[in-house]
Length: 428
Image 1 (cartoon, rainbow, N blue to C red):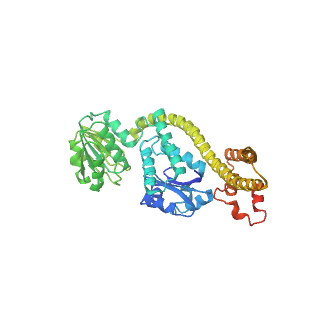
Image 2: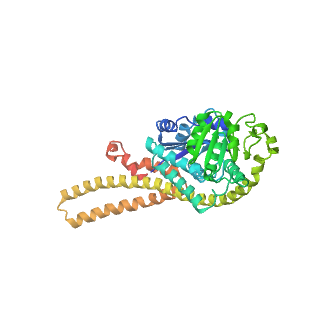
Image 3: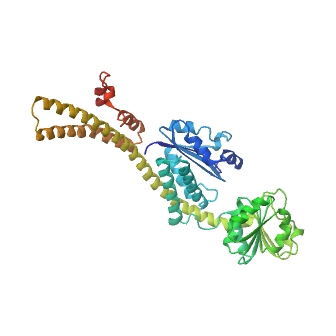
């Protein structure tokens, strides 16, 4: 198991929504397959979500990895692209799976998306031992973060915070709820309402098929309608959560007159006319009202995040040590295999000559063989120590040189015609 990981990330932390969208491949499987087909690339995986587009490759050298990923996000400004070396990529994957890199700190959805990326790469044949170990370790850390800390506890998303705020003023059990908008916030609000116990959900959106997709996503009775039906639906609803991207209000005060509902407007600009708050029976909350709900939860999660960071530090060091040992062990294994082949050939020659000089008894044969074994062990002990030390010090140049010198596929007999070739190899 050898190779170095190189990664590239375009995410909400540095990039705009448009830049993330431009970097995200239309087909993650096809993108990973194209990367795997490039010269020098042994493994690849692509992770694409609504807030990030990332790619990782395994190559023999970091330069090969950087070259393979050089055009991953050609339309994104350089300042919005994060390039990751081997150690940085491993740590970043752990942070991603733990929810520390998410728009909503500690959110749970990302760990499932990482698992999906692993399975997709496995099915596509682009996943190999190096990336698999790094990704599975990231998932392991993400699961530990959520079971051993409270990083994912408490309301922090706008959608779920809106539902929590509405539940303070209305009984949601077996109620009818209306969600305006079928984007990410609308979807989160719909899921939160279903989890809060509403009996029926209406999803209104300008594009009805998108509303149908959200309606099918929840576990309660749900209908999809166009925005033109939103006013009638609001009169049926105990709670309305508004989260469209409309530049103009979706519901004005006149349309809500006579309704008995709690409205939580998390859209910018507002979906619900603020004057509707003056209507008897209608309560209107906006984003500013959500701050009290979300701030305390954010603070709790930030405190938990510090524990997760410490967890990542320990797991990161363990995984790096594992990779280092694997690289050193491969070089050492190649060195011993090459030495054993050479010892076998030279031992056969020596025993043949001794037999020709007179009868060689079994004890003498064993003495010669033991001498050969002892010479190999003593000669290889210093370079073995040096390779293990090189791995511990991240001296990959020394390890790579050793792997080239002691390649298990190298046959010294092929070089016997070259003057001094075997002697030079043995001396080095």
